[in-house]
Image 1 (cartoon, rainbow, N blue to C red):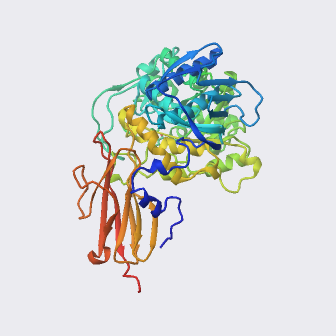
Image 2 (image 1 turned 180 degrees about the horizontal axis):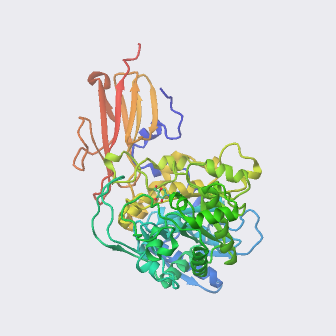
Image 3 (image 1 turned 30 degrees about the horizontal axis):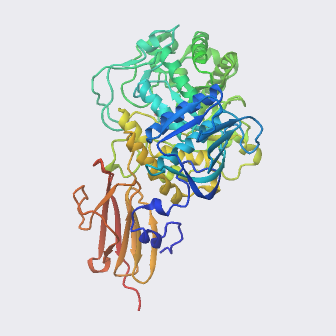
Amino acid sequence: MRRSCAALTFAVLLAAGGGAPAALEPELQVIPLPREVSRVPGGFALGNAVTIEALDREERAIASLLAADLHRVDIAATIAATPTASAAIRFSKGPGDPALGNEGYRLTVDDKGIAIAANGGAGLFYGTQTLVQLAAAAAAPAKVVPHVRIVDRPQYRWRGIHLDVSRHFFPVSVVERYIDLAARYKLNVFHWHLTDDQGWRIQIQRYPKLASIGGCRAATQVGGEGSTATDRRRYCGSYSQAQIREVVEYARRRYVTILPEIEMPGHSVEALAAYPWLGCGSGGYRVRELWGVSGDIFCPTERTFAFIDDVLGEVAALFPGPYLHIGGDEVPKDAWKSSVAVARLRRREHLQTYDDVQGYFTRRVEKIARTHHRSIVGWDEIFDGGASPQATVMSWRGTDGGVRAAKRGNDVVMSPDSALYLDAYQGNADYEPLAIGGLTTLKMVYDYDPLPKGLSPEAARHILGAQANLWTEYVPTDEHLFYMLLPRELALAELCWTPRDRMSWDGFTMRLGGELRRLEAEGTRYRIPLVTFAVQASGGVEFPEQQPVENNVDISVPADVATVVLRETVPGASIHYTLDGTMPKSNSPVYAGPLRVSPLEAHAVTVAAIAVLPSGRAGAPAFLNLTSSGAPKP
Ligand code: TNX
């Protein structure tokens, strides 16, 4: 039994009648929550038309993105390129404010209007993102934004989101929307997984067959993990270099750096299908049709390294960011074990084990990357073979690899599959579209702390930040993609940006609704959060708001009667429920206030509830299983 201690107590929910949580919310409606917020009484009315003063080119570029965002929340904005007394929104940019760093900003709203100050463009841009969220939360027609002083900067410098376009291909428009959303929530790295066994997706001029042959598979797996059935339909897709340049520019304007990944030496049979001499075997390679890992991998020959040099040269010319991701994960070594070339290499380089061969491979590729003025990032397996201390390690097999690498002085990005894998189920699989497996709930993402316990300050400095990965074996469409991304990306954004001691799950779920409503208005799919439950039993025992785990909350009350408060996250959604053990539907009774149930009388009661959006789209059911451990002693 738990006494109420969470911020969201039963009494608070009861007072709100289980609805309209925004009225109770003392925090600003901003995700990620800013570092320092001081509220001042009053507010500034944006109305339906504003002027943005933007005095240089960079400011004007930011202002035009801001104007487009404001337009979407029904505020028309004009940009003034010269000092304009009537401007409601002003920028000031100039180095020298140590509280802000490269990416921080000050946002001040007072009677005069809105001022955003930063040391550079990134900070100004982030200030505008905060402003748009405040404007989106403000009610029409006055659109009053609260008087406030915000001083904000990120906790981590690497705030990443990944997208696998090999398993399923997503066109430029979808990739740009993906980047748009990342930038909105102040993420700054887009990890573009461009190649894998199931398809090569980037045009390389010197090797055109990579896209034309490596970019097509003859069929695609249907069914879940382990299925060997396919749809027998040819599936192709790749980006031209012109398209890549367009996306790079799109990201640059939103202060997002793209991390392109070219997988090697494993996850590369699609490249072998295009140029069989890249493999250690005698050919017959095919772009993979099933998910999982191919045993055919790059052979570490001089010809392969020359190929990698050419490819990375073209990739580096397209992507201005400081890093190239070279993969390095899941490398089955069998093809190397039977290779004469590898045996010769091992003798020459004194490589004891096949992990050492991968280490040699990684260090060669790192040297190649350096000739193109890039550092490498690799999955944590690159550490096993002895990566150089300059390589950045992306820790995906949990966090141990990251911890070991940080202790040895390598930079680390935390993206553990246990908490930040967005291809896993978001709730009970019975009510979710087919996914790869596992469970990564919104709360699991939110609770993840990128800083492992017990690291020395020196090692902790090597934890650059965190990243969530979205593999797309089971994500065939863009609707499904955004369903898997949202709202978990918002939890990721907060753990990357907001200092840990400012984070609060209750506060986050209260702030989330406004952003979901905004996504709804933009026609972007997201997963509707489950209805939550708070319970008060006779005898004064309270259970504060409970988050269903795999859609269930089990509570045993020491009472015969209990009052249950239901809450959903999206403003304007309704809750429909049943008490008779049947599945709730859109035509089940509408929840209008606290429910009185009697678990003792019936032995057990299940409250089953769904949230239904005004559009009619319904979320997955959540179940409160109430049992009575006996009536309270008088
Ligand atoms: C492992 S995470 C992989 C990917 C798969 C993913 C599925 C990583 C570095 N490698 O190739 O898509 O699991 O969750």
